[in-house]
Image 1 (tube, rainbow, N blue to C red):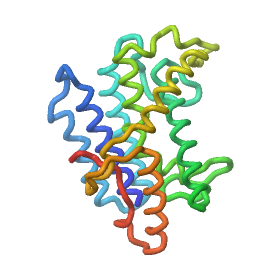
Image 2: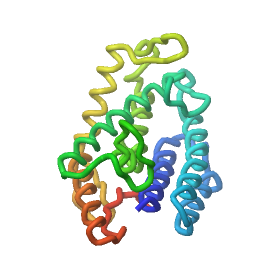
Image 3: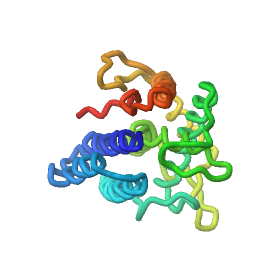
Amino acid sequence: MSQRIASAKIMNQLNLLKAHDEQGLFDEEDFKRFKAACESLESAKSISEIIGIEGRIAKSYFYYLNLLVKEDFQFYCRNRRPSLDRFNALLNFGYLILYSCFIGLIRKNGLSAGFGVTHQPHTHHAVLASDLMEEWRPVIVDDTVMSLIKQGDIRGEHFEKNGEEMHLTSKGIEVFSRAMRERILEIHHYVELDKNRYTFLYIADQQVKSLIRCFKSRNADDYISSYTGE
């Protein structure tokens, strides 16, 4: 399960970079490391090894992503608490929205969010939501952030700094929340072997249901991964 989720996330990261690299900054040599990471996942023997592979490629992903961002939104590195720049402030808010979506879907399907397949349980953390949202970070949040910046819908005036931490203003929250809501409700081709188009909420609910089937069958192949385009 962990391998499938991590592999889908990495391929979605790769596809996002390709989609937003309109000036051709990168070539296949740059992208080889993402495919190599997925190959390494296939032979990973432990959760810690999977996390290590995913973490290393994440550094490359955010390095490349930063090269595609307008100067006003460039960032030194990925940071969570506090958000030290505009780009990370957007990512952190978007990931929180995504996390909340999965908590709701997990509860709706009668599962406990306190036990997951990759993240380790700890107090006040819905680890299963963190697990399931991983492959969707690039698809739902990162793509929305990149599109808003590229289109000029989110601007410097939508942020304010409190000490070292960067925050969205009330207007910024309004703009970003609306964009996230629209993205979540858009209809897309999300599942590789299914030619139908669905909203994210529908297919995420189907993923949770497929996870229940996995638990019953003890077969990771029963889990529905997001479409990677590969």
